[in-house]
Length: 162
View 1 (cartoon, rainbow, N blue to C red):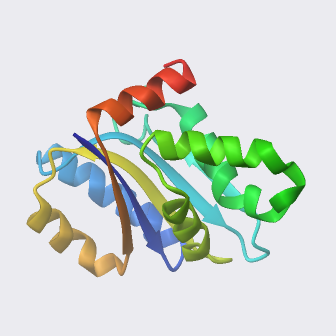
View 2 (cartoon, one colour):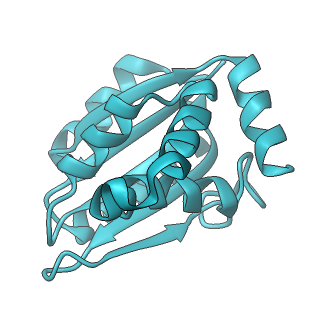
């Protein structure tokens, strides 16, 4: 089973340093990173996303840029647009819920990344939890986490045509 995890940081530099640490942990076989994305908010609150699959050594990544783009849109743009998109918003959020990612999790992510802050979104498996948690402590990351079953992971791939 894979886990979708979001680590939030006080600044972009910490998130980038954590990316390097995760690569090191992966080389030590303490974690398997299937896909990753970096979300940053500048001081004006403008969000930016970067797909990290190649940097993390996962090739194209398990989910691909389309998944991260969709999640990114739900986190930052749908709360701003709100009811203006009506039924379409509900359908998109419902579809993500069908994929094992609920609305509360999406809302938590958006609220956790304030202007000047950053987050790493990771799809992982085979984690040696105690060693990985010890390794991330110095980065003062906050962990938000949801699990995706193999079925939900397959639904994500199917929905995005991967």
